[in-house]
Figure 1: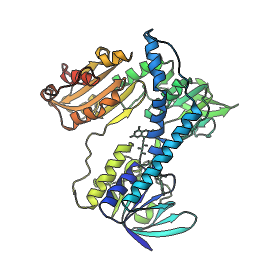
Figure 2 (figure 1 turned 120 degrees about the horizontal axis):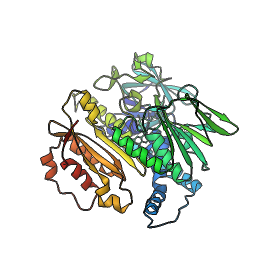
Figure 3 (figure 1 turned 135 degrees about the vertical axis):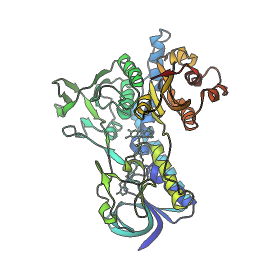
Length: 453
Ligand SMILES: Cc1cc2nc3c(=O)[nH]c(=O)nc-3n(C[C@H](O)[C@H](O)[C@H](O)COP(=O)(O)OP(=O)(O)OC[C@H]3O[C@@H](n4cnc5c(N)ncnc54)[C@H](O)[C@@H]3O)c2cc1C
């Protein structure tokens, strides 16, 4: 039986980052992947969605100038050309991943892996081969999940993966779930000319964000003529006569050419034979990890599959931490601090650190300072002046920043630094922000009067 210092199952952002770090550290390493290299992020997640939004961004730009009565016109996006470009970029990126692994001498093993014992796995790729490991990282990611009665038929009722592969623009699309995936995909199809109906069971869009952020997003969606229904639960979705029929519990029925079900994710932990190494799961099957990201003796679980944070950069950070831990470079528990998150599109939303509500619930003294984007020259020039930046303070230090508006994702790393370093108002005052920039709106928010909540 061939044995490695480290075997990693899954080549998404978590597994890839861990494999590169392990290879560079000189560990004999194998990466096992059952699907295409790059995982959800490259193939069906971050990358294709941003490519679609980037390609259609000028449409949103023209509409914004049209609202100011400064310009008119239209732009046609060739969907089949866009799909080809997506496939070309994804294929090239998979190749780049393969090359990066070869450069650091990581063996790539194609096939589906499962645990055989606390120190070996079996890979099935037609034949079954057992490999031994000194250490194992489970980085198997997550997949779309559905409530009963909402399962996709992959023709009319789709998950995010299916929607990314459409070759014809639907005239109408019903989206169930107003989280990041539903909001980003809806904005792309709306720019393509699709009529969007958005249905969210919670009382607002982007329900995990600050309520003021949700409000900015909801206003933008209504301005773009979305039908938005919040606080209403879907009873079921059926495909009837080639159309999606979405029935709400209150009796309302929406019909559309296609439906996207974007109500959550479930861990890819089934079929891993976790019991062979006494690995526990919780909830829908999220792999339980301790403060060192260990799921068992010499076995780690990173990224989506441990359910901590379902974001690509969180997965990579965990992967790199685990290698440092294995190498003895850190003995500290995994404590990543604030993890930045973005919702992309014409009106974007960002958040890093705490919301005011979260800190208040911790019993902390909380203040907020806010700036409106309407006064920002860059937002004005883009005809996109709706939105705000909200800074959350406790004990005189920045503990969180949330924002919604045009291009606010460009602010995320600076916000992250402010939170991570716990900036004071005086610190913000010492920094020169170039003029005119969107960043100046962040400075205004940092220096604005702080109000207790
Ligand atoms: C539409 C969409 C948009 C997104 N946009 C963003 C974004 O903008 N920014 C962001 O940070 N995040 C985004 N995400 C989330 C991001 O894609 C995930 O958080 C990230 O991919 C998780 O990385 P991972 O390494 O944990 O797992 P994954 O990327 O899911 O990779 C897991 C890999 O493991 C493989 N695997 C599973 N089981 C086995 C097995 N038994 N044997 C062998 N291989 C196996 C899978 O084939 C897969 O390749 C988005 C997700 C979606 C769906």
